[in-house]
Length: 329
Image (cartoon, rainbow, N blue to C red; front, side, top):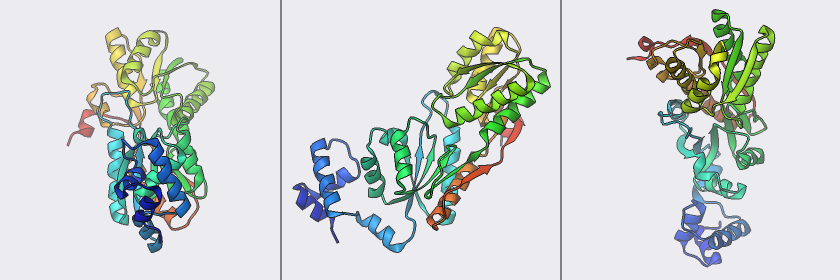
């Protein structure tokens, strides 16, 4: 079996340098990386930890690949729930878990990304916050090298499953409840990011509702930013009878803007984050159980580890009006 020592000798570098290259350490020249990768490919080198995992036929480590929202200064409660649910289920299934942030790997090629995960004995990956712009991650999914579960993205193949709620229906349901309760005639819809899969699905939901109810619709992109939603509301809400937001954080921004403008417009959100309970005004929102979504994703990964094919798993959502009394403990 080829060892890391053999790779170092063939490449003419130190063993520690090979380790740094395989683990994507900074301050290693591109020339050295290229030389080491060429030897790794030629000798068909597999790191010891990966080899042990493959030979035991047991799933090794799972990577949680997370894309944080840098459009807000608020604590990212959703991803904390994702991590919590995944770790709890991983403990039950006896999987080891590491957390990787998209920003750490976004400039890698497919080859570099594959080696990065392989060098850390990763057998499966759960991907949160995948967008249409994450082209290399898309290629990683298509390669079939790892067992993968994507949360809220339409990716399904032999080695990949998708897990999440029906965002189109959920957006339709919460907006309809708000519109019917308040007899609205026109909607300012504040969407998320224009490269997000959930954004497209949720826009489909609000469009369906407006077509059915013959409502006037204006769509603006708020990028899941409380500040952007506030500014959009200040500019456009006066001539609309409701503000529907594709996230609770944006709904909070919209509600604060309406208060400053001293006008009332019904506002609804999406997600059911705890912060909604502190706003002071109750709003309809879609309650997602993010820990449960993540737990189901980990369970689905186990199913893929057992040799079953990828599939689309749709989880339930509920409509709520969050109050302070509901969140304190």
